[in-house]
Image (cartoon, rainbow, N blue to C red; front, side, top):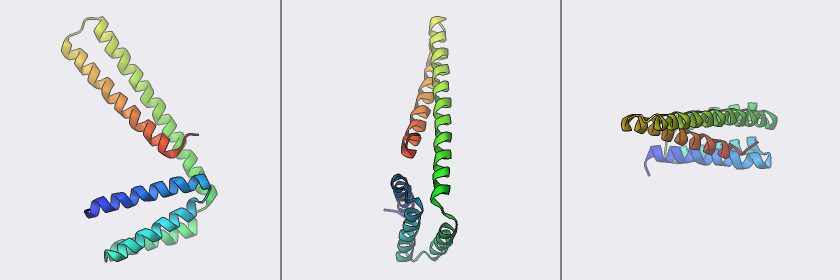
Length: 139
């Protein structure tokens, strides 16, 4: 596994730990634990710059993290994600109407294919936004 893959995996595992811990109300403890694990891994890899950055992050997390603050951040992220899902749903509806209109008006095959591509793209975006919202947990 290369370094980029390891970093991505560590970031993902940190996100999941924080996400799971939030349900139990232990967000700050989970963040601190995740950073400490990353420090251990960075030390094992002799990555002094990363260790230094993570130690700074650990100090800041210990000084500034509060359960209420983390809960407020999570609620804001959920609200933002809900708004993005709603916008993506509007985009899908608009793309579907445009495609239907092009078909009913007998537009060229190229125009219809273009409209279908826009609809497909909007549907993919909607799926991505729903997945992000699901990862945050629904409100």
